[in-house]
Length: 345
Ligand SMILES: O=C(O)[C@@H](CO)OP(=O)(O)O
Image (cartoon, rainbow, N blue to C red; front, side, top):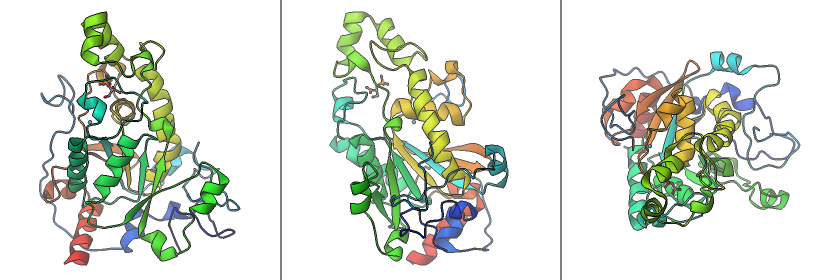
């Protein structure tokens, strides 16, 4: 049975079909290779100030309808199953979070928020480097914000992936967009990774600070005021979103759209922003509002989580494509890499 999340021809769609298929099984069929796992090593992609390390922390369900011609065929919660039941049944899945590479406004030290600014050359290189780091980790679905810097990062990262599937942006903004972007080959769909863009994953809206220089704003309003705007949990910048407000929409999107995919066994990459990702990490790591304000994410460093037994386990950042460490953690990741090696050699 096809397990693609891409559009199924009209009348053949089965919205919940891939609940039974893990991303790994989907990719390679049932594998039973036995591997020995050694210790692991990860680069500190994030740390908690006074917590994990002294490093500064540098990281409604799209409705599927059998009669609908949507390009995406996502997993949604089965009507009679609670999240808890799904969690119990869930297989293992990888979740990669990556903040976009350096943007032209990061470089100029300007408040960016929801202004749609592209990457710098350095940002492009960071995205490619991020891709090398995750090049052996399975990716079945990609979520990005609606902003180009996150989308560039996701696409550039995927140019490095060893599996060489093609990331394809889904266009669900209108019926025509859906119709006109359909793919009519099952084989081609299988060699593709759907990319869902969502404004809910956007950077927090910085209100009247957008476009202002961060240093000049601090000089004008005082360092403390600007720090409060930038790093408090519930104090919004003038006419903008606080981290709490950003978290409300980003985490709701994660729970409604992304978590069901992970619970169904799909491996997911999210390319987004400093503050939308801080919000999601707050949820995944169960950070308090005090803890999250000290969380800083660097540009272009991928962070890996494993969803296993219904729980998110933070793995840090894959230190590089040849690091044994990351793959030692779970059997499926090790098997996936082994299969890639077999396929490519
Ligand atoms: O300007 C922004 O949009 C963000 C991210 O670059 O800045 P801050 O570090 O204040 O969250």
